[in-house]
Image (cartoon, rainbow, N blue to C red):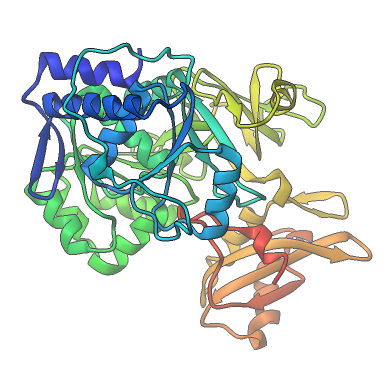
Length: 479
């Protein structure tokens, strides 16, 4: 089964059911399927070779969905990108994916020809053959936190399995009406689209979280039962609207959170505001979407973890020699499941196989599993700090720093030291000054081992992050 097949099934069985709401426009499943078929016919008329890549500007227009699913039905591979993608990243994606067409609206298009979504239409709308589940559906490019962006090939099966696993944990049904404010050029937002459509629910598109009036207005107008967000979005909602989300505690059935770390105090605050809402948080990568889940209310004593393996997923910890190690010992988090990506675009099967230990995909993340199966994330392996042979997780140090008065947020890296090889350097944002550095170190000495205490502290205005709120620690190496 693939997502396009289930959309067709909904169009036949519940044709008048609302699939998508965008402002005043309402699109039924029957209309959605018709428009998808018309878009597919358009692409077929262009005489493009099967498997050709097309870049799609992934903005929350209903026409994006027509082109996205229509391209799949025409045998094309979609490369969704943000409409504001900078010219350097855009060129790298162009070079890697070698697209035959660009569709949508791009801010930094350069001299490339871009076809408007309005042009992707045809009078033809007929039954058609569905792609094989083993075919590549999308190329998603990583955010490049640790290097150049990679093109991650996701098959229709990868996407279907991931959506099914998420729906099982979150508990989505056909009755759900989801407010989608997440960007849809990334795995999280696109995944939420597939999850809702797989179940035959309703999507409500809003541009983003920037307008609280629009966000809460649509939440109330459309009687939305859930939404997805990243921790940075929650920080903004909280800052701009206080406890207002609590007014929807009887309406909101679920919230899915992901993509970055979230302070425990904010998890607990959200739980108190929404005592009856299933608040789920996931951990995963674009290569292995939502590999673990935690339910805040059900696992309130494990909020410092990223939860347990998702339904249908197996998670193990491996040592540097590719051997599974016992619970409680730190090593690389590796995952196995049909949701794991099918390839890195342009990379040989032999090279891609190096990213696996047996059938387990190597996430590049360092962590542990406890006796109950809950996984604690320590750091990216490339970001671990080696102080005299002792591995230090920057996340652990940052969590302690962020609890100190006057520090709003922080990020830690390893810097060269002639004696220890590396020592910890902290970048902090807040109201403190360099005059407070010795006091910070003294406070840290009473809270953690001495080799984890920052030797150097630099005060900056802003921590560099990706669009999803992930700290870009490697960028700090050049500051």
